[in-house]
Length: 65
Image 1: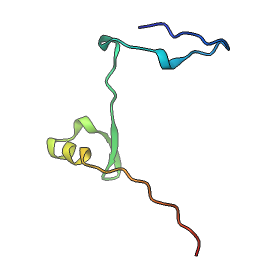
Image 2: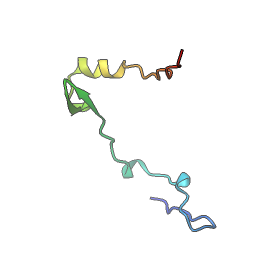
Image 3: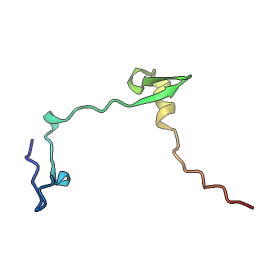
Image 4: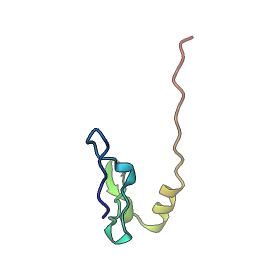
């Protein structure tokens, strides 16, 4: 792994960190299903497809009338 360079203030500049593929770790994604949390990797093929098709959105704030 590449050393994290220090800025003038002594704070680490994390924007310059680079990892080799051998140093990376797989991120485990969990989601809530039927009232409890489970890792997405444990889903069957159909449920993984449904998870991939989910659409994220932001609902606009309500405005008073």
